[in-house]
Amino acid sequence: MAYELYYWTGIQGRGEFVRLALEVAGADYVDEARERGDGVIEALAADPRNLTPAFAPPVLKDGDVIVGQTAAILFYLGVRLNLAPLDDAQRLWTHQIQLTIADFVAEAHDVHHPVGVGKYYEDQKPEALRRAAEFRAERIPKFLGWFETIIARNPRGGPYLVGARLSYTDLSLFQVMSGLNYAFPKTTQGLLERFPKVTALYSVVRNTERLSAYLSSPRRLRNNENDLFRHYPELDG
Image (cartoon, rainbow, N blue to C red; front, side):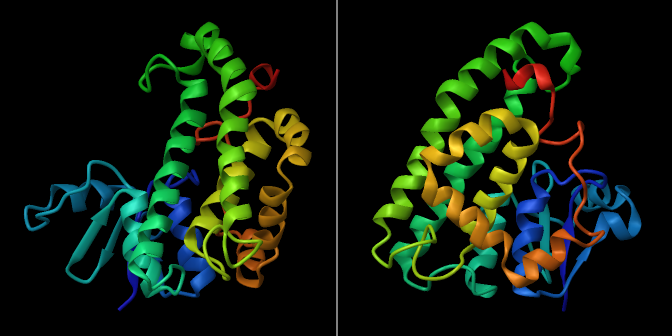
């Protein structure tokens, strides 16, 4: 039975982190909203038979199992897709990395929406400019420095975050770097030399055969200013 992925159409968003894992694993899945429209997301949440309704998409349905939250979905899929270690301690470590990536993504989003998610960017532009300065100068380097450290300390050697093979966290860090390259191209390019292991990981992941094919396919949506990562030149310094 195919996995069912529920996420809004028109943006990569948080659903893309799940989509990358499914694509690279060659998993059989249906992108429900793209097939049948966004109404299926509300219908799943409103269905009284769904005893574990998610707060918001993405949602993964695997038979009778329904999982929300990106990190929880990837934790569920990791071993099933051969994208996580079998060892309990290493699997939990992988999950910890993913939760930190989720923090990074939230901070990137809040740069352009620092006051309220229900307000337009133009309604909070002065606050966004101040938030962006801190994000560029302090937060991006702090997160990338941590990823650089854990790649360096990986006892199996590079280039991956966990163990000696690709995990879903590598895919997720690739997605974050892709988003930063779009939203903050000047800042990101200026930081790459400081974090060579993260830069090498990005390159290795991008050139993974199935991922490379997916990125060049119409299934990979283009970046846009309705997404998590948005390019406003004034926020890039």
